[in-house]
Image (cartoon, rainbow, N blue to C red):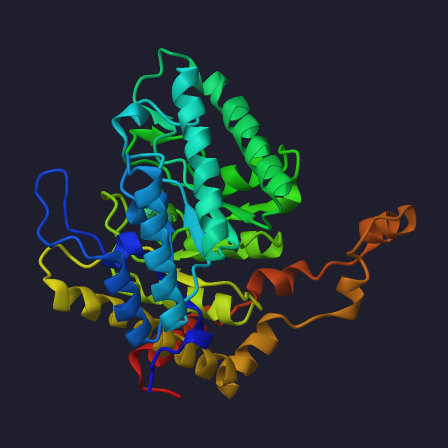
Length: 387
Ligand code: XLS
Ligand code: MG
Ligand code: MG
């Protein structure tokens, strides 16, 4: 039971299970794992796909011939295991050249380097069969406001994204571009801080239909926002192109905890939302094992992410099927034809009817919504005493 299978579309990044446990105060605690080994391990665990940054596979500065050998060897592992590479992304944050931004560096040479790295990553992804291209503007931020850079960055990023999609079209790459907001870390503040700001930005691009979101549980939580609401808005806009699942305590450094490790109730309602939304994309775990762990702990972490997701999926289903829940919800959403007739799109006649309508304010003010009961039922499903 709760055995992950490729059809569940679980994915991990090379950088997630391959994380060596470095933090700002401490050195690496685990050996770097060979990407080919990671592919085989993930396949054994029942994973659907593996995602990567350019540099996770090809160390910076690798000469072209060696690069091709690395890619060939990796492709062989992918073919042998049947794992997919659904998503690739350029590392625009590690190179010291990106210290004051990559696509938003004030230095046009740095911006050119970031753009070239992005095109090369698209080429790499195309070789590996990737369909989603993530842009995480991790270094696109600031600590110092005095530069006035916040007046320029939007235009620079817009220009770069328009360039990238034009390049993809020119090469015949079918990428869907998934943009990933984050409020801070590694920069003091990152531009495109939240799902809402990223979503609004998409509609200023030349080809908004090619762009969507890659929201991350930890990132919205760091901003103190409700991730379930953010994902619901993205889904409604038809813009959920990818999702980064993990966990996080609010108002802390970026923790990238195992999915469900911290906010179980939010994870439950997130799985409920995703599974009942028709979302067909990958369920990507952008998280890593605690720094306390050896390699066994890494695979326990990976299994845990998927197992928790599958348990929550079953519980969400049972919750929605529970007759008591259904009865409470039927009452919660009870319609009244007279009221409904006053709503909808505007007409002058309707507005006049609305002004004349006898709204039952006394009853509305007294109404109870039974949310204590409903929420308790959710908690009881989660605790395993129902369904
Ligand atoms: C960091 C981000 C990063 C992106 C991919 O916080 O989540 O892992 O998802 O570059
Ligand atoms: Mg993150
Ligand atoms: Mg992420």
